[in-house]
Length: 79
Image (cartoon, rainbow, N blue to C red; front, top):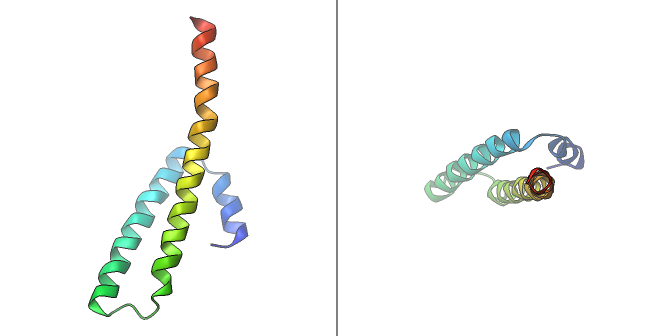
């Protein structure tokens, strides 16, 4: 994943990122099957896909933790 692509991911909301997580997990599953059957020509693609998934999961966690204090503050203010 290039820096430009990562910067574009930062602009996406949590819903879009969770869809991307599902896509990356499916891609990793398919790559694992291809590797096991010997059909995968470039095994580094599996490692790259895993790293991309980790990057997206990190962004999801960051966005959720950033949203959690904001929602907790509004809950305390209304109580």
